[in-house]
Length: 117
Length: 390
Image 1 (cartoon, each protein chain N blue to C red):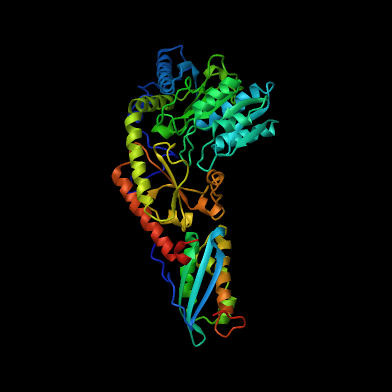
Image 2: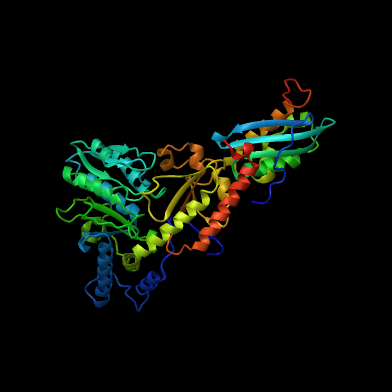
């Protein structure tokens, strides 16, 4: 496996948004973190347990979502990763786990209703 | 091997050069290519002699007489001929069969076919160590039981069943005993007379012989009745019609002859390598052995590695040819039913590896495999939430 860009975690802070999704017992679990400033993602990282496609998609997301704000996160759709990475149809369900995490990040955004950050 | 460490010898083995050489003498115009059933001419008789020599070599390895050996296309066909053939022949005596949940699909699927034909099958659950105790078999026997089927060495986890004890039990109760010895023949001592085995399924390609040939050893006295699966030329005393593949059979015979000569030394060396492999991977936390710690075939090591996903682990090991704990490397892969029968969760079953060694495995390859597995597991745990901890 090539080095996975974006793998890792940020220290907790008021400018860090964290979102988790999935279940290791179901074969896919992800923890996304975004460092945010001025309403935008300035840096992202991930930790993930899952198949190679899942890990690759999580890594790809950390680059793809740089510059995004809550509306873009809320609207992000797993099909974009499927197309960009040519993920086989059998793995689509795992990408939904990533979509859950991205949308959870929008809800956890500082100041968002129900934010847990 | 093209830069890949081959540790999938339980799936198949490379053919021994001595076997290849013998097989090549049965193919060309100057060789023993003739139909061994065409004994009306010299070339046919020479081919027949080669087939009969191989029959002796195969029989000798398992304590059988040559006349007991029926050639098949492999262990799958031998298992099917044993189960379907015997059950259909003796159906008027009873319609109950006993086997284990951890048997090879060649046995389990044959049993399911028999269920469709009106038989009842008891599938015994092994202990968490993979062992089926003879007392379990005894408890499952009924007056209408006609057949017990138990593999000698499990193909996924390598545990060794006490087929001798089960064989003696079955003989004392007048029940036929079938053993799939695809993973054990030539690697562990086996004797159909001593172990009271009525039907023994064998293959060549797990023992550095060619693919596409196997045998079923059938108890001669009293002769076990079998309904054939194939009809045609009446070869193999009518039990298995079809032109005998001389080169394949000769290859199997030579492979078995070599195994008889080298089994003790090979098995001891391979067991030492397997132990070193286990010690090396066990340096990682969260690694567990699947199956009984001592009752194991020399060449099979099955491990479960917590905190890594099975497909990603295989993806991280491009330099190793190993088997995973799932049926195939897709999102819908079913976890191994054998590991589940041992009580492993679906996730842990999918985080398992089978590493199987063979005659050509070297200590250098084992060290490479240990280093590769340690590196891959550490990398995957490093990117997992909570460092891979559950």
